[in-house]
Amino acid sequence: MYEIAKLSFNALAPTFLIIAFGYLCKRVGIITEEQQPINNKLAFRTFLPLYLFYNIYSSDVDFSSSMELTGFCLLGLILSFAIAVVFTMFYQKNPERQGVMIQALYRSNYVLLGIPIATALYPEVLGQASLISAFFVPASNTLAVIALDSLRNKQQKWHDTVLDIIKNPLIIASFLGIVFLIWGIKLPIALDNSIKKMASIATPFLLFLLGVSLNFHSLFDRDLIVCMIGRLIVIPGIMMLTASLFGWRKGDFAIVLAVFASPQPTSAFTMVQQLGGDSELACNVVVLSSVLSFFTILFWISLFMQFAVI
Image (cartoon, rainbow, N blue to C red):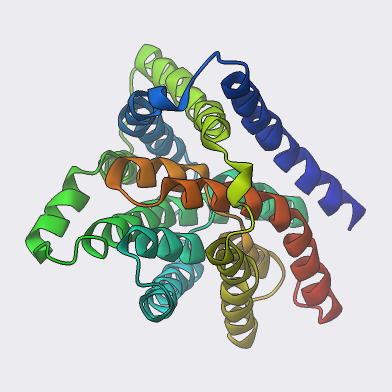
């Protein structure tokens, strides 16, 4: 357990240091919030799509295995989304917050934080975890577009939402990554290395922008607290209990935990900035869920270890 705690801390600490650096730069006047729209557009249309494409394209996985677990995680994602939609539509009437809260409840930072946790528990599951990310990431992004676009603009016709999904840079990048991965298409070495270097910019850049947008005055928002309970306790509890009842154990269960118990990804905030919604709430969800997930993930691991599930 000490090793898991150490890993969680080492995985999360750089995240908060970069966020703090962005906040510091705003406080001393190096960058202002007025510059955010341009920076967010740059991240959303270039670095983040390249990151998603390369993460899937470079996955070393065997499609002949783990498809059952992949299917379970995708169905769990859809179920989580449905629960989030039903709850939010009853709880929150503000359209600017509805999409943000739905995304906060169902969406997790599986790639950056979840996979390291799962492989720390069972190193041999790295291939399975990568395979799931190739399908989980585009599915999660597609649902995010639906939540932020169609639910926020209820007068929008369904074919306009489909068009928005097709045009979304994150969806396009994920689809191309899957095509390249399945067909075994390999980029020239120079282009591969260039995309890899540009993709590496995405995470620190997004975290930096998150720090610039951070507002400590709204950390005690009631909706924010509801999002934390749903994202870190309710949704993971439902999904992991279901997984245990289906018989998933050890490494397979560790992947389920990584998929559903991880905090909100930074890209969720960037998507809100671009598609519309309460960006302040989205920012605070990412930051606070990342902080609290250190404790909730340790709790879930300890709990299911007691029942010999992990």
